[in-house]
Image (cartoon, rainbow, N blue to C red):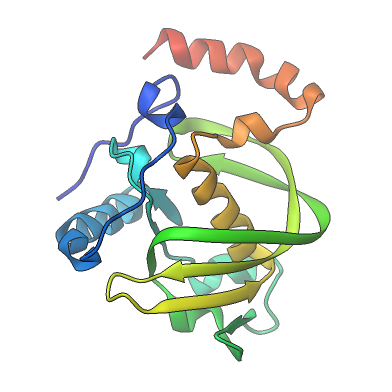
Amino acid sequence: MLLSIKQYGDAVLRAKSAPVQQPYDEHESLVQNMIETMYAAEGIGLAAPQIGLNIRLVVIDIPKDEADEAGESEPEEMISVNGEQMPLSSIMPLVFVNPELEPYGKQGLFMEGCLSVHELRSNVARPLHLRAKLTKLDGTVLEIDCGGILARCLQHEVDHLDGFLFTDRVSSAGKLTLAKKLKRLMEYR
């Protein structure tokens, strides 16, 4: 079932989300609906606040061709999962609750967009690498060390759980450029 994606200006996008309590698998039908909604919207990630629920739940699916287009895979981006190197595609779709992120390394500037900020894109500086502790719905924990598109996507989606949008991470000059467009989004809400 397709869910409604909340848009810029909706208060739910600015609230800090509560941890998901066990048993996590009680959210399985919600997760399937979130994945279906994300695919229909042609996104690669969707956080629960974007569908109106302030809980720490995220779905991500980065298609292999998306990673290739970003120029980050030769031939496919490799990541470390629980200390073992594996292709990014081996953990997709990625569904997790209560994430813990530790970004590290220098910052990189990349173009971002968001399903909740319709048709706007801007450059955002984020750390290029991160370590993450992600709890899957079956209770297993993935410890991931990654860079590339997964590192950016994880940071973007976890920002949603903390009440931030990518527009909050744009430079001061970028915010001036976006100001009129964001104002228009608020008027058409």
